Structure formats: structure tokens, C-alpha cells
Image 1 (tube, rainbow over the protein chains, first blue to last red):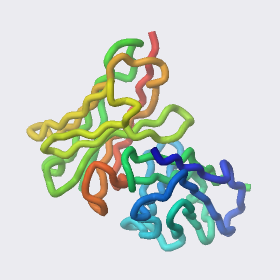
Image 2: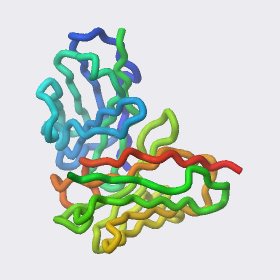
Image 3: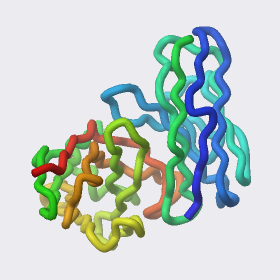
Length: 108
Length: 124
């Protein structure tokens, strides 16, 4: 199974700053089938990015995804208060699908 | 608008069977090429895929849970169900039902719609 490692574990930033989150796979992710989710306390995850770089319906363009193979990145261009949350990556290029352990973006 | 709502006991005893139901907005569960499934999240931890199913049947399960889990669909009730037997404290988690996106057709895709989740605690 593909193991996803997210870094850093916690990212402390101020509103207005740029956030860069990393997701590294133990083997190449087939078809760049890599998604990113945002989860706020007490809520279900929300799909942000699929196929590494495509934004899901209704997701603002401050969120962008990039990468291929084993290295993927989620970038939030300018952090707003509602963006402070936990972010997970998921690979669905091969079965079983797997998730990373998450990166918490917190207010500095 | 699509809605998913999980329901079931919030407390299950060790060694017993966890049973949950997810009610999907009428008409959606058998519409299109969508797969449906379950994802769980232990308190304060990450997400874990449990399994996925098409409304016509044929479930796919996580290898780590395959021996204990059954997922089924009842289209007449527009419901998805989850049964996990021989539970232990390690099965304590928030259980989400969700829909798999058709950006990739099949049981392995990303999840584009989620229920609110239900907490199940395994304890005597």
C-alpha cells in the first residue's frame, strides 16, 4: 500500500501569509490521483483539490495543488481566518486508497 | 441537494458488532455511476478508508478490516449500511459515510460529499 507522509506536522502562520504543505508518497501515485481535504473541528472533511491540481466545485483559487510522482504540494496563497484547519492528502491511484496523517495550519 | 446522514448506536461493547446506517437523499443512491462508502477517524487522529460499494453491489474493503466488515446498499430505502464485527477499543472513531467522486469511476476515488459523521465508542 502507498504510504503518504505529510510535512510539516504543524504550520504556524499569520493571516495573509502563504502556506505550503507537502505530501510525499512511498511510491509513485498512479495517474496523479492525489486529493487534498480541509477539516475544521467538529466537521467532516471537505474536498479541495483532486487529480493533484484540479480545484473541486466551489473552492476559491487561493487554493492550488501541484506535483506528480511521489511529491505533491498544496499552497494557500494568502491565509484567511477560515483557512486555519487540518489538511489531509489522499491517494486514490491504487487500492487501497490511503490518507496522510495531516498537517495542522494554526494561527501564529 | 444531496444529503447523507449517519445513524446508529453511539456505544458498542467489545467483541460485539458495530452497525451503522447512512440515509442518502431520495433518488441519489442509484443515480449515475457513483460509488458510496465509509471512512473513519479515531478521535484526534487521521482518516482511514473502510470500504466502498456501488448501488448494484460488489463491495471493496480495506485489507486491514476486510475480515470483519460488511457494507451493503438498500436502494428501496436509499440507505448504505456498515457492519463491523468483533470490535475493540481500537475501533472507537467517528464514522463518516461519503460519496466517491466520478472524476475516477470505480471504488477508488476521492470523496466529494460527506455526512456529518457519527461517533461510536467501544467500551464495556
